[in-house]
Image (cartoon, rainbow, N blue to C red):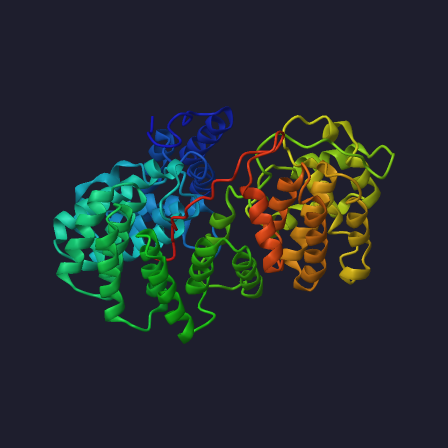
Length: 526
């Protein structure tokens, strides 16, 4: 039985048992191509099952070693790729098979593709070219993120074993040590990451070596040393603006926010659209003053630059656990409220609402996108859902009213905002005291202001009016939380909202928000 993420269920299911029997019978008849197809399919689902490797060994013993049955093809299945890797190893070329396994791990890192004996052999570390191994590990690191998700760590550890053996065989190869450090820190081997990165930086001083060392120190919580390494990286290449973002993030971790912002400003003077710096700058500005306008500007940048070189999580991290930016506020729900339509929505409409509803979201534009499926629910049904028992009887803040109102935003989307039916319907839900329906409608308006700059002035006026009306009432705090998530509010209104949240909590309202201190986790580099 194999260990790792699949170890608990790597037994022959009825279907795999049948396919193994069919592959064995095909080999007995000499129908190797049929057997190869069956084995490729089996490997894609149960890559370390011993019976599969037994049959692969029989293929490897045939003329040509079976490799002709798994010739490389464009867009081939992962099973074929992995089969070719094992047959290369069986033919005495494990160093050629390892990159193929790493390709599979990059696509599906939670699966134990490399948990086979030949990968753990010390001889592989001797045979493999250090440069090829370094490039293989760097590609793998880029695919799995930093840190690697917990459910992938065990499946990726065999590659760290290969690097250990290669380092022991090849000595102070700077690229190998640096790439190995990047993998080690992703897998939680922080001390090893620091050791390898430091050795690599000594063996061949370079910008990349200092970056690897800086990242390793950051993972170890050694921020002053990380900062020193990243500054040395800048000295090697003052034109690499991504390192400026790394320096700024590290300075922020040291609570030197003014210095961090100056580094982002220096980089933006050179290139105001450099994505790593733009993301870092907006995140740090938001951390400095709490003005949601910085996050709205970042959302605008993301929308206008869909082809950025790297995937960034700054906006999501800033919005996480913040009222309305990342989900429903905590605390007791407001009264259910009334819907303007007294009708019974279809069962399909109820199912669609329940399918998209969640009390959390990555950020307001993500909530808007998630509600797109509700365009298949008629507006009158979305309004009727606001009074449906599945909504009104909910005892937890599931956000069903929120999603029904967000769904309205996707109807008549071709209409100019100020004359649109979606605006008219949402404004109609704002009448009366604050309840779950009026709250949801107000959030839908706020969300639309995030995704459509032309709607911001109008929505800001609506939010300002609502906050002013309720500034001294029992619902003031709930409206103020929504106001602080709204784009385009003027400074006096934001100050009023902030002051409202700072007053002692009123019964039935939730406690004061504790704003999270951000620690960036950048995955832009290996």
